[in-house]
Length: 222
Image (cartoon, rainbow, N blue to C red):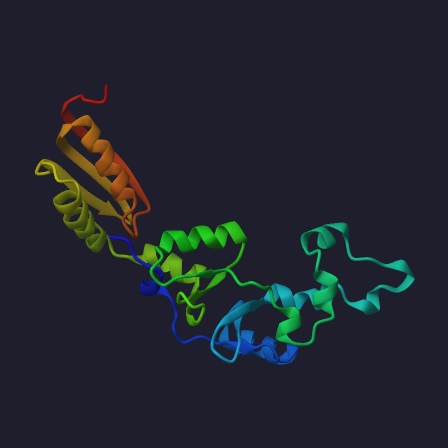
């Protein structure tokens, strides 16, 4: 029922080493159409990430604008306390954010999305348990989950939830899906069962929302 990071990640990854020069990193980002690259050591371990934001610090904190006591805006200095140091960086080792935020291939796509949100990043390096690079997962990869077709979503709700996971009588439940919005109608034996069915349907990949029109024969919620 749950897609993992391994299901959606990109395995052909553009990467750099600690010694990669600033301009080569910029070219890699532009050519690859990506927002960040992992920095690897000689044994393919992820030691950091360099993002577009890291490169832009050089412009934001450019020394030539410090004349006559100029300082970057307070907001910029508070947001990026290491900005001046990174602005002087010429290699990936000096520009990267370390340690990198990483995720395992076996993690759920939801867990990856939460990591991105918590750390305010657009991409995560996917590593094995030894820290070696396996792939990259981006926000765009996760958004693709919502492109799942209505028929496929309906089949997943019926097969994975109603007929397998609940272990109760679901013959009276009807499933309709329109643009990712699932409507559950019909009846179930107990009121608590309808709540469980709705909550589990929300967790199916590709579901945008769930409309609950279920009724019950027995109110066991007390």
